[in-house]
Image (cartoon, rainbow, N blue to C red; front, side, top):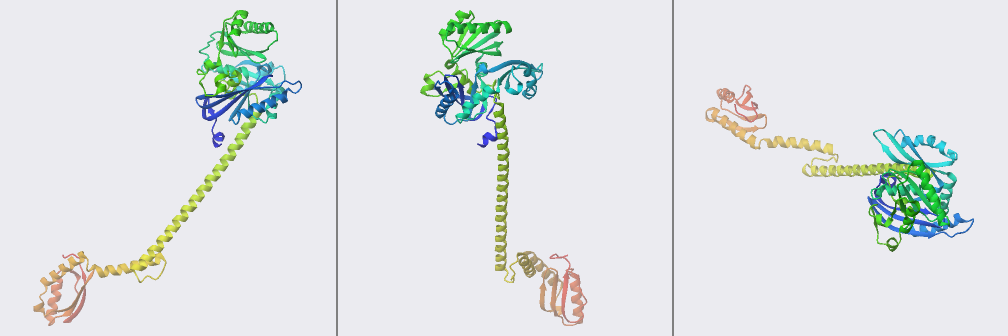
Length: 493
């Protein structure tokens, strides 16, 4: 989907889009899967699955892959799959850096952890999570998890044989601690404490100082329960000697009887964490499903799927993650190029259609104008709009000259001219016989005759006295046809 190419799945612990997250936890005996639906800040627990692994010597990886195939059939489609690697394969180291940005820490990390690894750095996959950030003093504390490549490859091979490809591999106890940070106010460890989590064949113990994780140890359960308690007691003593006396232990994924026995055996205050009881505190709601309602979800698989800020961007499968980033970048480039091409093509097509539409409208308008002009001006013969307009303009000019005399303004001025001339000129005395008088915009044509030459002089004088004309020529004959230029258009002086 385009949203997965250009937008992140989530910002911190906030999911931008609805997302089906599957957490997978593999033990030698079984595979556990938990399905969470994340949308915004809402998390819904929808399904939990358990698939037992057929025990067969020398072919354990094949049987594990077969069990994984079966459980993935039940899970169906998903948006994200996160698997956990057991802490027994992982080395942990707490480090402090004189800077707080993840980018700088990632650059310095290989040089810091190399002296502590019992195997070459080139044979290791590693990542880190921020445990503490002090912005005032500008330092950060991180916990680093490192694993030999062969152990991670064996883990990934199980998924590869099952046809399941994923890029995120976390560490079980780091996921548990990420879960704990969400509800640490309910189970506070103000000084030194420990979290002990029961698994099918192992007990994982993490040491906490003032609520922050320091290190992790994994113990194999012995058939002799007494030896298991001795091993746990020895581990807790070693923690106390190295870091400080443990004052409280939080047990997970076990029962109250075990907690009571632990408190009796170890002599340390113990408390039981019940997952189902704490789901609301973790912000997880349960969907109405029979298996979710009756079965206790596997803590490790749920913690893997849980979007904790502590394990955000953490993965030991760095090669797969880098391949995913490279693939994502290629997809972004291809998608961007495709969208740009589509946008340019769409703009070009839209422009072409608009220009064609406008051109058609202009052509149609020209034809309509020419047709209308020909209808009103029969003298127009050309189909060219410019030529037709020129011919029409000439015809209108002629019409204006003809009709000017009949306009209200001209009619009003013409009456003034007649009135003035009638008061200035006495036809009986002059014997004036007026044959024609034509008035237009600028001139007045008088055509007629008078009885004698004195009358001609008198007429000439009367015309000048009227002040209607700019110039009155000398009249030489008793018969005359005189064009007179009006002094002002339509005005009488």
